[in-house]
Image (cartoon, rainbow, N blue to C red; front, side, top):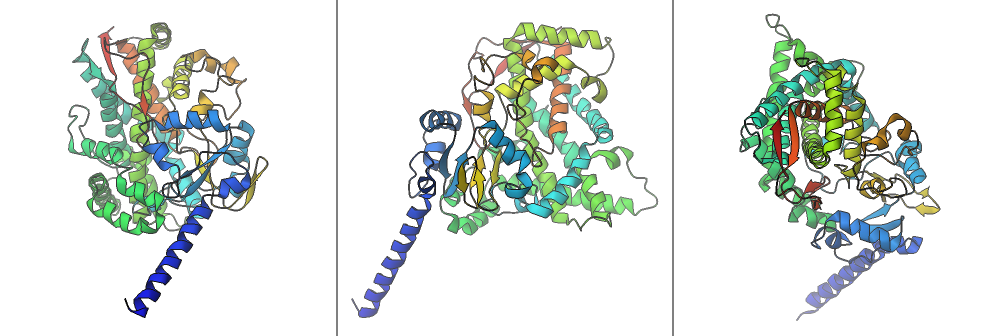
Amino acid sequence: MGPVVIVLALVTLVWLGQKAWERWDHFQIFRRLGIPGPPPSVLFGNLVELRKSGKSPLTVYDEWQEKFGHTYGYYAGTRPTLVIRNLETVKDVLVKHSSEHFSNRMTPIVKSKPLMDTLMGLRDRRWKELRSILAQTFSTSKMRHISKIMNRSISVTTEILTNNVNLDVDVLGLFQGLSCEVICECALAMRVDCQRNQNDTFLVAVREFLRTALNPFIFFAICFPWFAGAVQFIVDKFAVSALMTNIVCQNVETAIQLRRSQAHDPKILPSSEHKVMDVLQTLLDAAESPHIDKITDDEIVANSWIFLLGGFETTSAALTFTSYLLALNPEVQQTLFEELQAAFSEDEDINFDSVNNLQFLDQVVCESLRIYPPVVTFIVRETSSETRVESLSVPKGVSIHIPVWQIHHDPELWPDPFTFKPSRFSSSEKKTHHSMAWIPFGAGPRNCVGMRFGLLQIKLAIARIIRSFRLVPSPGTLTKLKLNVPTVTIVPEKKIYLKFEKR
């Protein structure tokens, strides 16, 4: 072995030793701050325990809370993550001091297109500009138009249920079709028939995207960020998830060109229905505005795409769990039916204005979202500078994780937390709740921009289904569900089957 080889080997060993020491030192952040938490692996942090232990992340978080208290630290790969549960501190992070120290979500490890041009990937000033534009989509006037599209799709849902009266229905599959259909027409300028056809190519592609989102390549990148660029290339070119992204992007790009050509063609009158209401048109109008920094076509496509990802699984899960709870609690279902009977004549339509006047329906939906908050691992903010959190001096770049599931099931905040009691959200009881005790959509400037859209779809669907059908459990319906969190949204581990009896 020559001297050059020996020198190179020694230099390599020194470099590897330096990197190993730096990585070990990185995992001492919480120990130096005196923050308890599970001991991290130098290779994977706590990600294996959280995602590969055979337990649901909800169970792991419960175990960590029991062992380390309400404030503790763990490592999502190399990312230091501080969990806080004190509601006043939660309010400081999400609301009071959000713009000063916690204005951004955590930085994505894999910076792939179109993610980095969405509200999830954009940061600071550019995020604020796009957020302000997208919020216009959910004004009262535009939501009235959106409700018409929703009602058309819900009519298909009730038709399917009529054809399957007294048969076992996979409710998650049913509501995934509904959610996909509504979002496609409202945000992507697409017409799909995925309620009647559960094997619809696009619906299957969306399901596969979400099923494989946390694939081994992404897991590897989270643990070893130096390889994120290579992982990004592999995922963009070869992952199953690329199919859905390509379908959405190509369709939206085509729709952009079509709408622009129609807007400048004096022979074609603009469609009043789409002009006033959909996400795509709102972005296109903003792109033409001289008062707003130029919105690129990439940003238009990306934020139409993220609307699908943000709404598909969350809304379908919320509808599934609400239906399940009503089937298991017939007295609550009967009270809701009586409210609907009192509010509407037999042939009267349920629309945007009327559904929002149903107080008991609102209580039912709120309580369902408390017991089963759809998004449980996504309310996270990143420290933009060294700052105080409670009595701790937290460095820049630490993720602050708000444990929604644990807050929503805290017996001190919600006595008998797993019992379905819509009365918790009566006008008198709501006044007694801390403003951060119910946060299924987050809170503060970065709360869910599509909250009004999601709530409207849930309420319209539940109201129309309960008006026409009695929900009852199937013989195999479980009284206690096992839940999984494939990405950030909770879903039942096994299919939920219910029967729908015609009223």
